[in-house]
Image 1 (cartoon, rainbow, N blue to C red):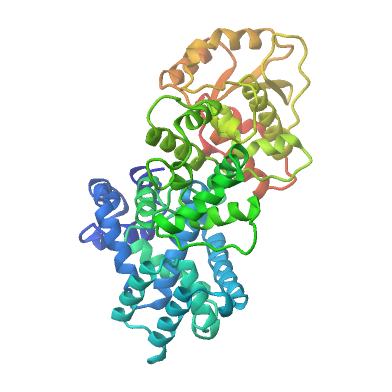
Image 2 (image 1 turned 60 degrees about the vertical axis):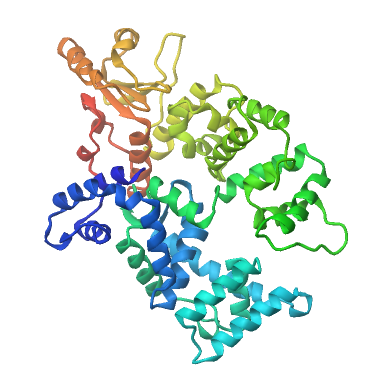
Length: 512
């Protein structure tokens, strides 16, 4: 969801004002609708790389050290690594505190005797800076930042060194509080870098619109999410020899800003992979550090072919194609005995036939599986979440699903398509299902990724001459309805009468 789309979904006037504070003049006097109008007009200022860089630089110099520490952790180390750049505030808080606790744990394992001279020099400079009034001035901070970059020391390593001296995240390694995190959250919101939205459960979430997130990633030098990078590294490890990984790690210390890695003994492939994930940019892993480095064009092209991507183009184009592909991979981690439940995280992708995504995440092996799994997932939604078990289908000419509704039926058909479904193209098929049913069909539901505007009129035209209503519901709407109902009404059977709607589904008519 980009910034303009987010504007349509601003949850309340308070959130709108916090967002407007960055670039909308006199926003305090405006109504919610007026603020939305001005946000649309000033949207380019919110997505401007120059403006975003300026705001992030301001955070580095914020008068509150808590903000200076928490804000980058929230953005760089957590939210930018989440699918769709969104997380409930509760999960964000937990992730930040977990990061701080991990840093303290790492500092306790830090052995100065095994550290390089550069590390010890940097730690000494940090200790000297902190020695005066137990604080670091703006000038000292700028000097330390310059030294950190010069010595090729990461921000995380700096945090570990500060924690070793008892000054991270606070004095005596005291963790920040949720109030501290809320304060940093508000600063980010007022600077137009972080937004507040509500999810389907009504939880307030931290969210970064796609177009803003990409600019923040550019600022931090982030090329892709960690999950996708893990998959990419695994592939390289399988397709190349160990020496390739070792060469990349060695050259990283010579040509890049990454500190030279020194191994004790002969490192394993697993150890090399861990170093690569922590210290080497994905583009360098694939392309190396000079014109003659990296994977050759033949291998990159073949790799693209395996993933169903374009195989033509120069080396840079092939690498960019692969980076974008793996960056779009999502985590699918569901533990369940019912295999159908594992399909819920990809329900919308099944509906829209996102075959590349489904293959990459091992959901399908063949394209034909997409429709079948879409039907299985829909059956699960009705049976397990809405507690209306679908009836057994007989014969070969039938819809994808059928439910009992009093003395009648409710039928549905899944339409998995890359484009919007036009009802007119399928109405004769659905009419046959309705006319040959053993009982009267109260509602015939069409479940698809989206619908053409003309489809609504087709519903009206059909209902004028028949006793059956045609309901158009998107996969996203059905999934949201089912999950919300199951959470708010555990063990309660969903009243199928809510589906007695003609045309597009209106969630507002359902009492959740």
